[in-house]
Length: 196
Ligand SMILES: [Zn+2]
Image (cartoon, rainbow, N blue to C red; front, side):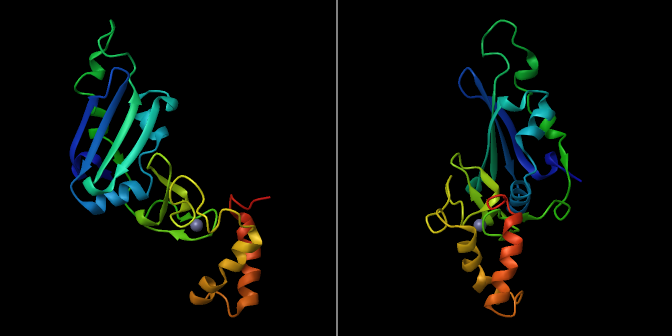
């Protein structure tokens, strides 16, 4: 198990306006940052459990690659300055994050693009949602910026099967074009985009 406290250089929280609270986790090593983001360690559900808040109050979890940082924004439980504000949401809100532990690389699931079947093994392979967060279901070729890329947006499943022929041949997974096509016709319907 990795303890976030050991791999993060800085964990801090601050109010961003009266209604929102942001947490910054800055990693010491790029490899730890990449692993944390690519393996989808901190999801809204995980953060909500950690802070005993509703998942819908976790507004965004966005990685910033140049600074090796993850910024988490939540709805402040009580607006800043209101009566009844609790100390737990004062300066020491990052406590639960300091003690957060997660599994090491290699123990998480395999991520397959649910459009083109690419296996995504590192952060750069994941698609990007419109809020900047990585998309763990679609690759960067299919979902580069909050939507399907133009090359595949209007594809049918059969189009994608044909598109994948050269990749399957190159990888040595199929002996010829016909075999590659047949393979994709079996495997693509198992992906979310093509499921019937
Ligand atoms: Zn893809």
